[in-house]
Image (cartoon, rainbow over all chains, first blue to last red):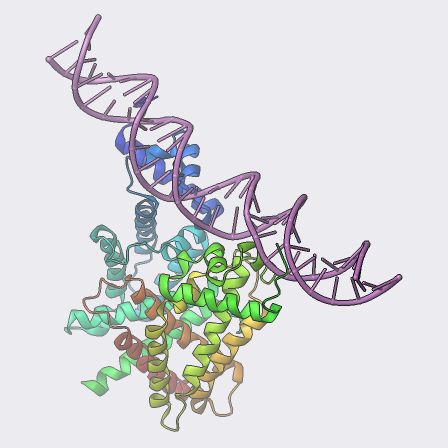
Length: 204
Length: 204
DNA sequence: CTTGAATTTTGAACGATGTTCATTATTGTG
DNA sequence: CACAATAATGAACATCGTTCAAAATTCAAG
């Protein structure tokens, strides 16, 4: 059998990613499989290899989509308040996204591309876009300073928050009586921002 | 065939964990398998199920061992300096351990027990022990204060550092030109500690 | 010393998985 | 209408975790 051409290459790509997204949302990333994707769109697994190099590639492109949706969610939180309030809105928006899309969010980090190499540019571009949101929020603290310094602070803070959320999500912070992610995140942000601000006057 | 009884139950347990540790160290956690463990100790895979419930259980016990070794490494860094220096020694010790045992360290977090439930007590006890090291280091900042508050700060800082190290390890912070984990970690620690110290006088 | 119960180990079996590729069915073109 | 290009298939291969009846060995009782 062949060439039903019910769907164009691009349509098929969309259907596959849509199906994969659905399967991950419902059953979680670990149980995602080529065969399930195929059967859920009415194609054989072999067909998927016409469009994606392998499952790694497919998941990476699914993750890129998740980052896109995350950006759409987070960019809405922009407002004209103090740095502290702006950042808190961003943080809350992020936690809401994680809550609403837990399994997709997990796939972002549980997926380890088998090739140790760097991630592709089109993927890093999405991360860059998200990091820019943080840059924008912290920018008032870095007026006229080296932008790479700002970027370093943004990345540090963002990575720190990721650690808290990821460890609480995997129950690895249960040693604390009540490990509320938002509370711990705010603790990190508050102290980090205070430190950031006060160090400006010390270091020059 | 059966009951060679070449090895006692306890010996067998040790051999299995030793083999698993070796396989993870060399080829990484994702390629660990019951069959490989079995063949590397000269037993059939079925035998392993007499001692471990399943692969999940086995890896969890392997991870507990890794936490034990990590504790032995980190407890050596204890010294009588300022909080800042003490913490930096702890941090450097941790990064050295990660460098020297990358694949075992990755297994700690890449392994997701399939049951969503809490981790077993004997596992959490190891995490607790490690967190106590951080508690001890930060303690001078919390003289006579609620120990649960200290614990919250320790966990927050530790989780934050984990986020930085874990994201740099998986190349997910490559959007920063030179994402040196130690530098970013120190950035987080320095600002967090400054914030922590100064907030004490504000909040009372 | 023999018999039989208890216990340890096996490995075939089952249902999965990702991936490959010769084969087939369909389409567009000449 | 025939033929080349192409889309889709699904069997095949090598894996995987896990189960469990069968077999092999030991130990204890008679």
